[in-house]
Amino acid sequence: MALFSRSVPVALAHSPQVVILDDPALRLDPVSRKEFNRDLVEHLQAEGRTVVYSSHLLDEVEAVADVVASHRTG
Image (tube, rainbow, N blue to C red):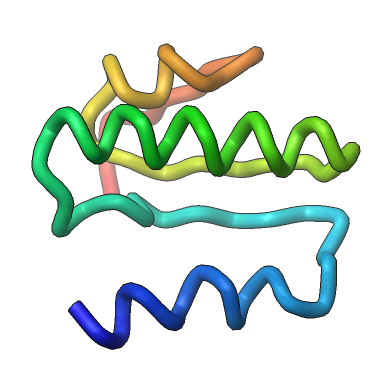
């Protein structure tokens, strides 16, 4: 969990305008995942950043997304 706890803050430290998140809350329990995703995406959007969020759990993406896209393979 140490890598996870440092990776998101380190990636955001230089304030990128586009943030690509690949299932950032993967190791959290379902309740914590929902709160983490909501809080992180809302914070980034409030700062005017674009968030590209990748996850295999569509319900989590739909909860925080303005637009959702999916693909069938790879």
